[in-house]
Length: 410
Image (cartoon, rainbow, N blue to C red; front, side):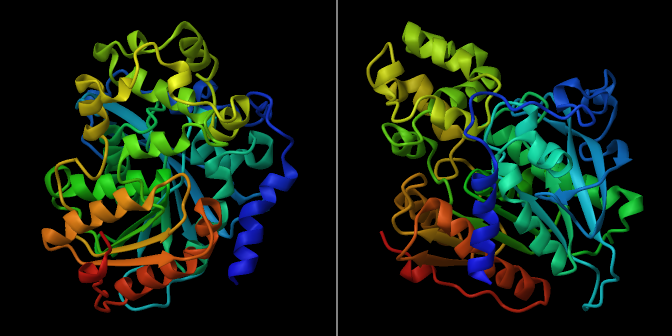
């Protein structure tokens, strides 16, 4: 099963031509920026957080294979990181077969690695456009969504970066997740019970959105009771993650990622820290998803685009990065956690993830942390999925979680 899942996740790499810029969208499926359905209504402030604004039935697929589920795109009210009203979309999927388990059909909010600064990086687009939408993190993770549906669970897949694609901005992403769950439960045609057990699941960039949502939940959505939180390749520290990308084969993702911070924090005047060449690279990446950005500037270093040495350590920048990092953010998840991570993960360093989990443990959160001694960041997406599915199944069945807090290495 693990080998089949790994093959499924790697298959897009074999099918998609080497990126040379933004992929052309098929005429029938416009990118979100050109689709009126995604527009934020002028009266968005009149809605409550998580309230459904509009919806439409869609066809959703895993790669080019239709998913055996009813599917809707649901637009809902949410907020950005500064508390300003906004709206985004979640794809709600419900298996066509009746739920035969105990209690109500569970709801899983699956956060893809939306990783990108354009609407076509979002899962709602990937699930509709398929291969014609290009290779994105969201597209490559559709087999995991299919596996959750195969369990009989309803699945909400939010475009958690919001309408401005605020990549790595925790406040926007966390609220997008929580309000997406609220909207899925309130969306009548999906038939999701108010008593349905709720789980959050995400890997890499999706883990960041998932864990920060759980950190924010006690204050932002206290009535939304979570049953389980599954995190793979956890990004504990944004600074450590940027350092890991710098000089690596994936260094080209750095200029792309800076765009998310430029959109969310104009008051920081981040361009002052960039060289002319660095700023040009950032501007060239304004419509990129991660698989466009990586080959654009392979092995790029952070120092290679800075105007100010060690700009990330400058107090305003360091404070901003910490405010978006689970290790440093306020808030402790009040839900059992399952964490899986490759020891030699080259893009999501394991040390900050472990430090984050130890912090949660110190405040009473139950954590089961599983470290793989073989593999790396990409392979663990597939190799770690069966454990996450088993954890979610056990939690939905009411089984007690395993606690490994005392054995998480320092």
